[in-house]
Amino acid sequence: MRITAVTCVKNEGPFILEWIAFNRLIGVTDFLIYSNDCTDGTDALLDALAPWGVIHLPNPARGRNYQMEALKHAARQPVVRNADWVWIADVDEFLNIHAAGHDIPALVAACGTPQAISVSFQFFANDGVDRFQDAPVIGQFTRSHNPDLWCADTTLEVKTLVRRDFPLRYYGAHRPFAKATAAASAWTDGSGRAVPARFVEASAPQWIRRFPVAGARDHATLNHYALRSLESYLVKIDRGDVNREGRAFDDRYWRERNDPAWQDLSIRRYLPALETALSEMKQGRLARLHDACVRAHRRRAADVLRDNATAALRDHLRALPAWPPGELDLARDLGLMP
Image (cartoon, rainbow, N blue to C red; front, side, top):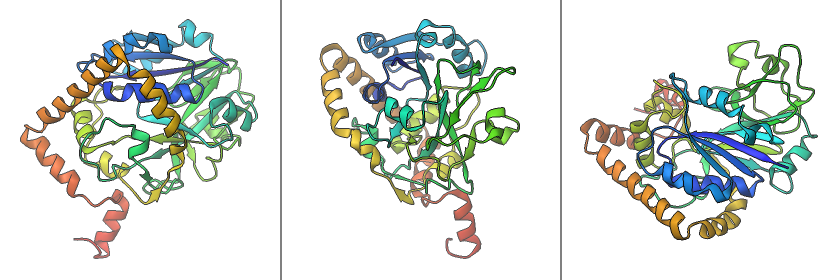
């Protein structure tokens, strides 16, 4: 089974090796990675990863929606066209497969070999981690919101595995869009259930990339580490969104994702094999390039904190209670919080 992962990156150097190693563990065989004007050494690291199945290209985007332009380009590339399955995800997203075997072939089998599998997000909190650590993200951050409820929402975004014979019109970042004259014969959630018809049809904005999450994660969850350490979050703000222009990573983005109500250690099943794979990868040139990215990340974290506004934001985020916005507002209305 050939499985191609497609992603866009900008200044993600310290996190690249973990993401590549993890995806190889779950069955990804090939990677098509687009980089956007990196300044931390990510480009050189990606170029050196060719022996691990990585094709690295500069993002061809000329507009402001960098990811969608890259996906249009990706759909024409042999590594995507010849794949049995295509997996489009970001470098802070990890497909946590619960089905026995814990890899993509096992997930496909558990879901009944459909043409597409849409897996629900689970946002992992900052866990009070201030400083960036050069260690696997999946081992550092273990707490999230209640998986069935994010802020006040019972629907959550998804990312989608797409089979070669899906009647593709075009790839979206979260799901494929089918040709008007055809429909997917089978499209499931992470429990192998048929996804809602309104989602398939993309008949309303709220159904384009999300659907109800209750009961949707029996075979897989998409762990999303959108915050990581506070230092890395400040570097992320400085970098900007890798996928589209004009999106702000701000106070609200942080509060919505920094809900530690639930502990989920299930992804740690991969840690021993991941650490072994990383020790094998971090040799010679790859080790030097990775270490250069780590140093650049730490330098940038120190540099951005020299700005008074960024230092104030750090202190503000650090002091916020780890409650989602709706719960915090309610607690204040009830006099439970100042």
